[in-house]
Image (cartoon, rainbow, N blue to C red; front, side, top):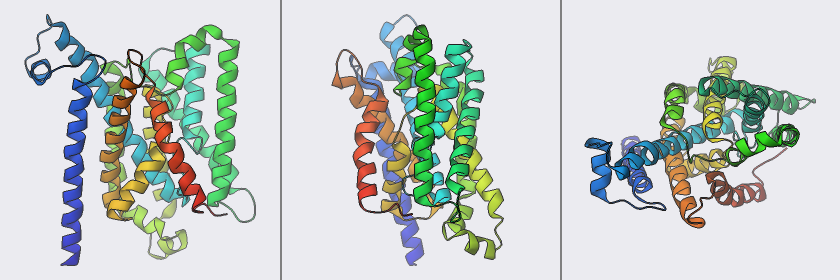
Length: 336
């Protein structure tokens, strides 16, 4: 009976957050430097008239922007939850462990040095960079007698992030014309992204979301310790590989569209566990919904900070996430 009641409360909480997500989504469409009413927004979606300029803006700019924010927020939050379980480190996320930095470096290298502009090609290049960053961090964090530890993997992630960031800056210094092309993107932004950009990566994101939920039970076992999971019959190498691939795909898709948006992967998994505990069957959907809410609201706030200019959403997530990062570190949750 208690289990049923717990599940009902979790389901009710998820439903409440879905309603908040819908309100946030609508607010993202209506509010900004230019504000629109309900009737205009409704007509833009269901009775579109390409001769009405307001409807064109909503249909081609506001709606895609909200969709991109929701998809990337959900992806980064799920990736962070998986990484924290894989590494047994509460500070793990694509932005901290070098995954985002690796993807960013490869995208900038391709766009600036080789003039790659194809969204599909940049997406695959982003996947490659994310994978290389993750592999190097894992190798560096595993060196030594004691193997992989939470502290060592954070240090390895910080080192790889600094290395890839230096490489990225070096490329931009040598190619000042390319700097103007990618500078705003490097701060993390969803402004000015076309619908085609999210359409090209969304199938990969959606498959990864579903795959993350399907391995939720296995992640629960893995969280108990590798030896315990093996004793219960789990093939941990396959579970870790699957989770790693999901993280790389989600981070790679996000970086290829919006640049390196940080801290969502740290903050949201902890908030999700605060509400519903450590069961990944609930953590994954909660992360998806809460991550979408956070990025949509961060983007909405960023529009009003410097009107008529916009602050990159990556700056807003850093403002939110940096104190949270310091709070976790100060509580001594990262142990050697």
